[in-house]
Length: 252
Ligand SMILES: C[S@@+](CC[C@H](N)C(=O)[O-])C[C@H]1O[C@@H](n2cnc3c(N)ncnc32)[C@H](O)[C@@H]1O
Image (cartoon, rainbow, N blue to C red; front, side, top):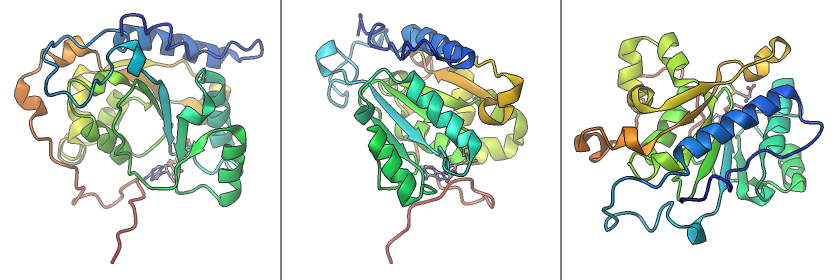
C-alpha cells in the first residue's frame, strides 16, 4: 500500500464545496494518509485472511454508510447525504448504504444516485477487506461496537477510517460500568485509535456535532499484547434497555 495515499483522494474537487466539507476532506486525507497508506508492520502474512490491504492490485476503495436516517423528512440526514456525495471520489456503486428507516422511495433515490443500497441488516458487522470509509453519523454505540468487533484484528482495523461520533465523546457521556460492559470494543479502541475532531459551523450543529475522523494506526495496534486480539466475543447487549440499534429480524 506504499502509494495508496493518492488513492485515498476522497476530496471531490468541486468549486462549490462548502467550507465544512473542505475541512472534512482535509481531515480525511490527513487521517487516511497517516494510517491506511502504511503497510501493516507485522510481516507474518501466513494467517491473514487473503491479502488484506496489500499491494495495489487487490485494492478497491469502498465506503459503507449506516444510519443516514430518513433523508426525505429529516434535514440533518439530507445534509449528511450531501456531505457523503461531496466526499466520495470513488465510483458511487462502491458506496453501500443501509438504514432500516429508509422508505422504498428513499432507496429508489439512492439507487438513482448510483449508490448501492443494501437490503440486509448487517447490524454493522461488516468486515473491511479493502480500505473502507465507514460513515456513521450520529449512530448508536452498538453499531460502532459491532463494527469494531467484526474487524478486531491488527490486519483489519488499519483498513478502516470511521467518520462518525467521537469515541472519547461517547466515553464521557456513558458511565464507566456500562461503557466497559456493553461497549467493550469502543472502550478499548478509544485508547489506541486516533481521533481528529471536525470543526462544526454553529448553523450545522445538529448535523455534524461530535463528528470525528477515527483511524487505527498499525503501529499503535502492534504495541498491544497479543491477548487483545484473541477470540473476541461477539457483543450481546444483554443489559442494555435502550439499545440504539435495530437488530435483524430473527426467523422463528
Ligand atoms: C440517531 S439516528 C441518526 C440519523 C441521522 N444520521 C441523523 O444524524 O439525524 C440513528 C439511525 O441509525 C439507524 N439504524 C438503527 N439500526 C441500524 C442498523 N442495524 N443498520 C443501519 N442503521 C441503523 C436508525 O434507523 C436511525 O436512522
